[in-house]
Length: 92
Image 1 (cartoon, rainbow, N blue to C red):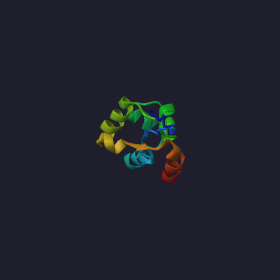
Image 2: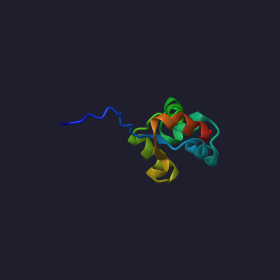
Image 3: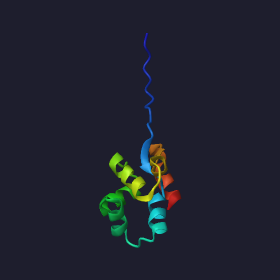
Image 4: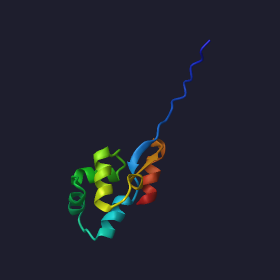
């Protein structure tokens, strides 16, 4: 007899490391979000979504990494969706 497990599996979601974008912007001396987004090759709206914890696409992760000479694993991390708000609040 097969038993069913009603427990939902929660999969981690990839996000840009909390606080990374602001640190890169500050360390590069860029003053505006528009100029910072342009330096990465993304829109200001995309930058805002990434700061709020939206999952980045691979192209965006690669563009951030290349623009600032860092590894892909330095750009993204995985978080449990239920912990996303706490993770973002702690970073900024």
